[in-house]
Amino acid sequence: MPDINEEPEIPGPQDTEVAPAKESGGGPEAPETPEGEGKNEGDELPKWARDRLTKANAEAANYRTRLREAEMKLSAVKSVEELEAATKELRDTNQKLERQVLVSDVARRFSLPDDLAKRLDGTTAEELEADAKALQRYAVAPPGDLRGGLDPSDEDEPFNPVTEARRARAFRY
Image (cartoon, one colour):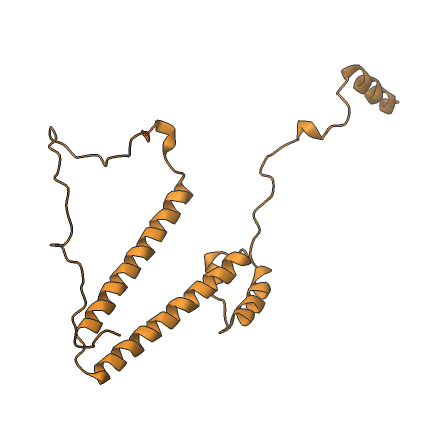
């Protein structure tokens, strides 16, 4: 177990190696892509995928920031009381994050939209699942088939205009 008074090693900007920048002929530099992964016109991600990536990147950045803040708090600890106060705060934050993860898992399992997922109530997984079942009635299910009009594959027999004309004339009289 490390000593409380011992300074933890935190990599700083002096510990990281930076590749020298390439000189360009002016203008903004485009990010480099690995070899064999040229960017074509159709390679762009759909909007929903970009939104999910943006959200995941923001969450990851938030977690990295919280980690750095926790490391700074713990490195500044001088006494046992300060350590207990800092760890209590970290435990409270950890409990909140665990609840967020549990709520998002239950909401995803029951296909609840974000608006309804915020309204899940309960402390245990079983309570959250029971509440999610109740809220699932109010979630609008996406339609199965978005095609409009008639589906030509639904007909059993091919269309014969002569037969249809005779059938129409028979109903006139």
